[in-house]
Each structure stands twice: as structure tokens, then as C-alpha cells.
Amino acid sequence: RTNPPVPKYVFWTGLSLSGQSVTDLGLQEEFERSWRRPGVLRRSVPDESLKATRRVSALFGALTAACLFFAGRRLGGTVAGLVAVVLFLGHPDAAYHGRVGLPDSMLWFFVLLALPVSWWASAAYRSFLARDPGEAGGKGALAFLGAAALAPGVVTALAVGTKLNGALAGIAFA
Image (cartoon, rainbow, N blue to C red):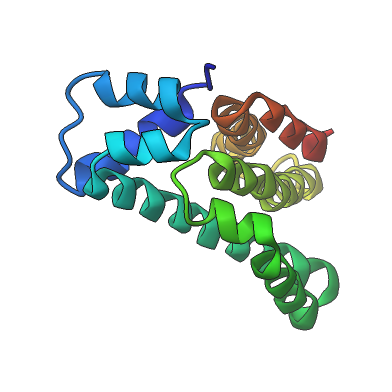
């Protein structure tokens, strides 16, 4: 079982920030062997490592809820944003993946991040087209437009780099 690399780097960062040693591939190899057998995995992985990866998942769960609120508020107002967050947080999968060290909450965040990034890129493009062609700062406007065109690709790459089904984030940019 091989996942793309983004979660490995993100979990490595979380482990490193919590003071856990991540100098060899032993933990990764043990996880690959035991991930479907929680009892075996639980005995093999140190408690502090589990806590660190769970904090990373919880952080991405919270970021996902923030993206949902932003999207709901933009599409239907503040109440819609709050309803979206409550429905998300009340779902058993959100509760589960927000408390285990698996990449699913990262995937949700990057896929949902595609919405605000696509809205921002679209607004930047419309703004670029609406400006006066003789307006000063053409290079700055072109650089901004380039960043607006690049951002959706970066978000999609992060989603795909988390899990392959993250390619669905690209639909938001179509």
C-alpha cells in the first residue's frame, strides 16, 4: 500500500515539531505492515507519535470546517456556513478521521480549498480583463494573474499528492 508523499511530509513535520525522532523509515514500514490491524499497530507505535499524528489530523479537520464555513457563507450566507460546519462535524467519518493519524482529513481540506482558490483566481482573472489596457503596472498585473493561474494547480497538486482521488479537486477549476 503506497500513498502519495504529501501526508508523509506533513506527518513528519507534526512529529518533528512535537519532538519525535523521525530519522529512519522504521515507523513508516511498521505502519505499512500493520495499518489494517489497529491492535498490532497500537502496540508498535509510541503513544507520543500517535498523539502527534492525531493532532495533525485534527488540525486539518478544523481547517476543513473553516473552508466549509467560508464556502457555505459565500454561497448561502452565514447560517448556511454554520449549518455546513455542524453537518460536517456531526458526521461519523469527520469525527473518526479528525482523531486518527490518517491522510483523509488532509485530503478533505485540499479538495475543499479548491473552492475558495478557484473563486479567488476567477475574480483575479475578471479584474485583469476589466482593467484599462493602458494602465500602468502591466508587469505587476501580469504577475498577479500568473499567481492566480498557478494557485489552482498547486491546490490540485497538494490534493493529488495526498491521495490519488484528490484529482477530484481539479473539477472545481474546470
